[in-house]
Image 1 (cartoon, rainbow, N blue to C red):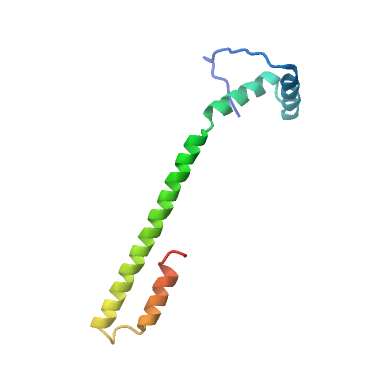
Image 2 (image 1 turned 90 degrees about the horizontal axis):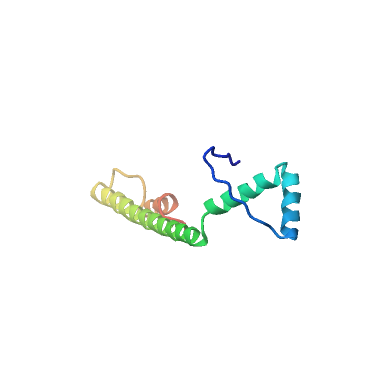
Length: 113
């Protein structure tokens, strides 16, 4: 909920009859005075993110998701290469077949398709 700063500035405005009635109705339902509800509406509107800001955040999130996908793919490829190399250099040290290694890497490291 919005709190009033003691150093706030008084701002007044007029509303058409229909909007004034709607404000009175909403304020009564919310248990607020019409002035408090109007103040809350103005502050909420001034502090909300714009469509452009939301779109920019969406683009950044998609970039992060793409980077995570690429990172998981690179990690899976690296781990697979390491496990396959260990098996090749020390065939008796691993009880996993190349197919089992591939399945494990795909199941645990690769991003979902």
